[in-house]
Image 1: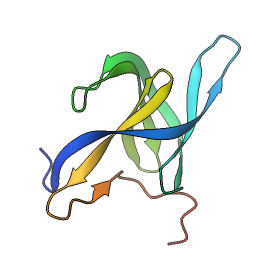
Image 2: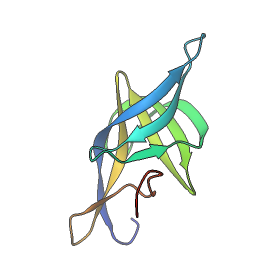
Image 3: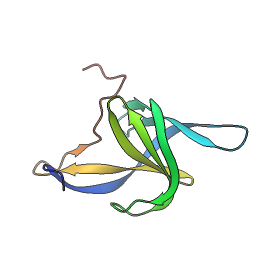
Image 4: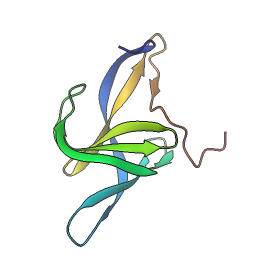
Length: 103
């Protein structure tokens, strides 16, 4: 386990996705519950797979957001990420900085 990360939990998120004429779905951005939006720079991999960390099956996308990569799962019709729960503070982390943040 990564130092500082106690566990992970399934966190459903809003996803903007494109569907092409063949029915292929490509996620474009992820919006967190507090309104932060993370643009997906590139989909690196797409396959049917299970989340071994938090449970659930569907289409697993390996996506690049800035310099970070993370898994995004499409458990039709909902989307989720394996949210990191940090030690001590109980705070959560997504691992990337939003594009529209003012910080």
